[in-house]
Length: 193
Length: 193
DNA sequence: GGAGTAAGTAATCGATCGATTACTTACAAG
DNA sequence: CTTGTAAGTAATCGATCGATTACTTACTCC
Image 1: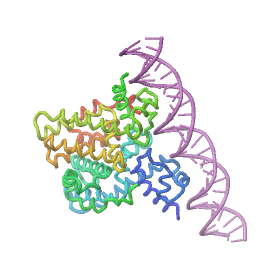
Image 2: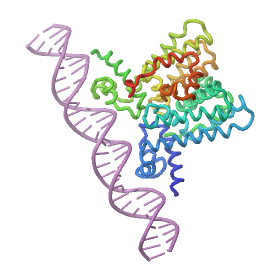
Image 3: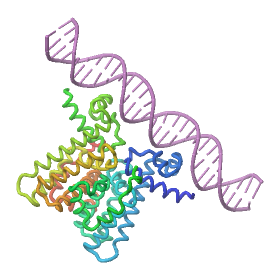
């Protein structure tokens, strides 16, 4: 398999492993096993675990930006924000993406990852304003809602949907027009680490 | 020093260490050094690193709930939500509290920590509705905003306030009535791990 | 049919971590 | 005194992790 293809495959699987285990809890061997290659190969391809995480973050931001841009064309204003919100929820299909973004934000104090995480966040903020035409207040509440969705995904609260009236009530207001997207993309038990 | 007092001291310092290093990246020795005791003492007092984290999470939720309850008395509606929001921002003084909550949410897939993290989150949701009298929609946007504040704190974006017009603009809309509280409680360089 | 190169692994090393054990110190009660 | 107990530490052990080294395999281009 050509290296470029293998690289994308490893990055995809590494996203899921980092998402479940966090940065410190992820071993290069866990990533290697998930991708079906040997541990030294992962290290040699990315140099260090830190550089692997940076590559995972860069890919996550790229996918996120592309997903948002694809949802921009069409009626603007509230409708556009709803399309972008649904697209964000649809990213649950990219296993671990929301969680990896949270992990990166939590590394804000790290001298290497921190600056990258901050500029990733700010680029999404700029995309919302410059490319999607949101006001600053719209961008704030849009991104705040994204952070709530991150939390609900990370907490795996969707697994208990239907089993707890509080959870059902929260989902009704948290996903006014994207609950089907959320439900249809939940990971199966076999997909979890 | 009596054990109860020592315990609270260790929990406070452990909160800051877990916040900076994550669950997997935190060592019991780092916590011990931060608290000024030996590593075996930390392990013996809490049993395992996992139980230590659960104790940190329980304390964080307790402080958060007490802080919210103290902000409830007085005019209700939007004013009450603003008081509670400012109180939440003021919790920056409790070093690492917002980040530790995020860390716990990210452990949603953990068989031990996950259930505790979910019930902590749901208890705060219930507090907002039952005790603070919010509608479900108010509670949603209130908590979503809290998740945004968590992110800004974890990213250490406040450190760059004044150095980047994008950051300044975001803070203006993110902290319409709590920016002073935010600014006044930022950690000094010496406080960071 | 070699020579060169890309893809990948087995074996291993030094460092680190969580946990255990055995020990010490300070102090209050009888 | 001395006995008991709470508060703590030094030393250490087995396991694990990130990284390095040396090796193998497969394909391609004269």
